[in-house]
Length: 307
Ligand code: SPV
Ligand code: MG
Image (tube, rainbow, N blue to C red; front, side):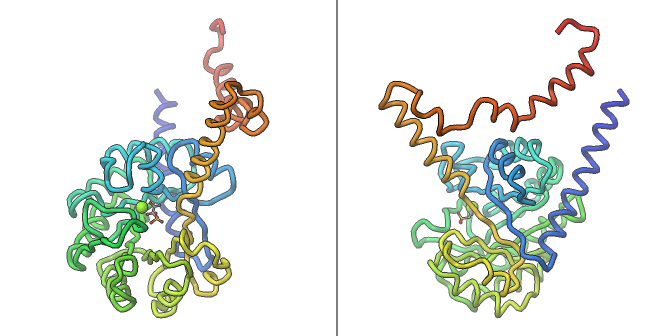
C-alpha cells in the first residue's frame, strides 16, 4: 500500500520536473536540439543517445500507425502513443499537436490529457482541420488569426501545470503568405499567451527562417524545423538566436529504410544468415529494455517463491 503511494508521489514529482525542464530548455540562451520519436522504442533510442528532449512528430506517429499525416489518426490514438513514449523515457516530450484536432474545445481536452500523462509541451499550428503535412502540395489553408488566438488561450487556460509549454506554429510561409503575414501572426500568437513560436519553411535554404529570426528580435523563444533546409550549418541558427531546433522525422525515415532493406534481403534469400551482422542483436534489445532490472525486481519481490 505504502509502496504504491510512494510510486504515485514519485510519478507526480517527476512530472513536475519534466514540465519545468522543457520550459527551461526553450527559455535558455543556449541553442537546444530535440529529436523525433514515434513510439516507445524510438523514444528510448533518442534518450539513450543523449538528447535532452523529444519531438513526437505527427508525420512519424501517423506513418508508424500505417496512416497518413492528414489527421487520419484520432487524437486519442495519438495520445495513446504518447502515453507509451512518456512511460519509456524520463526526458521531456513535445507533441506535434497539429491544429489541436478540432476547435478550441478539442485543444482544451488535448492539453489536459497531455498534462495528466506527463507530456511537457504541445505545438499547435495555425492551419485548418484536417491538416495536411506542410510539404504536400500548395493548398495549405490557414485559420484566421482570431480563431488561432482562441486556441492558444484555451490551451494556456486549461493546462494543469504552470510550466506546461504551448508553442504556436506559424504556417504563413508554408502557405505562401509572405514574411509580413508570418510576423503579424507570430506577434498575435504571443499576445494570446504562446510560450514560444515555431516558424516553418519548406525552402531548400534557411534564408526566410533567418530573415524571420532577424525581424522577430527575440520577442519569444523561436523554434525551427530544418527538414528541407538540411544543409545549413547549425552555427547559423546559433548566431540568429534560435532557441530550439527540431530534427523532425529522421528516426522514422531511418527505420523505414533499414526495415525495407532487411525485409527485402530476407525475402530474396529465403534465409537470414546474411543480415545477422547488419541488425541489432537480441542481447541489444534486452539491454535497451533493461531486462536486468526485471531480474533484480524478481529477486526482491518473488523472494520465497519458486522461480
Ligand atoms: C512533423 O514532424 O510531423 C512536422 C514537421 O510537423 S514537418 O513534417 O517537417 O512539417
Ligand atoms: Mg506535423
